[in-house]
Amino acid sequence: MPIVIAAIAVVGVVCLLDLLLTFGVIRRLREHTEMLTTTGSPADPPAGLSAGELPGPFTAVTTDGELVDGPAGLRLVAFFASWCTVCPGRVPPFADYLRAHGVSRDSVLVVSVGPDDTPPPHLAELVGLAQICVEKDEGEIAQLFKVTGFPAFCLLDVDGTVMVSDHDSSTLPEPAVA
Image 1 (tube, one colour):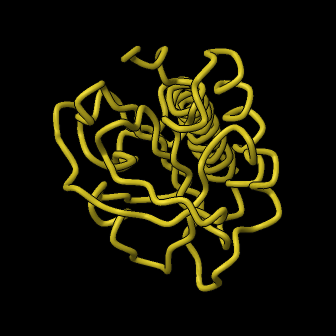
Image 2 (cartoon, rainbow, N blue to C red):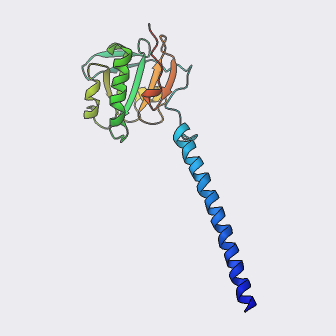
């Protein structure tokens, strides 16, 4: 009988120790979750070119048939992909950003990346606020800006040098004035 009592006591101590370790793991998981939601994942790749980099020159034809020579003269270049599931939700905040800062249509280029020659319907809100062009996947402009994921927003200074690039337009500062 004393052996059974000793075995039960050992199992009880092991269970109690396991319970304490489980509570410790749960606490650490909560800390990590909070850290990731407030700071983002440290493994997130940059949206494109880093601050201070200058993309090469390019020419694009907008959906209105206008010719855009960049990056000089542009203050913002935004990239949306037709197949991107996050992009439709990022268009309204971007449109609000353009309106709030009074950014001229001629200084904003929106590049719609995808297999088709037509921009996706969710970009309709940007008509009149930005020049919109369409390019195939891995197109020239996306490569010049080294876009790593969609959506991507690049704020440029008056010389066309990248000031900030991010996947969220709400983090962009006010655009430079010419």
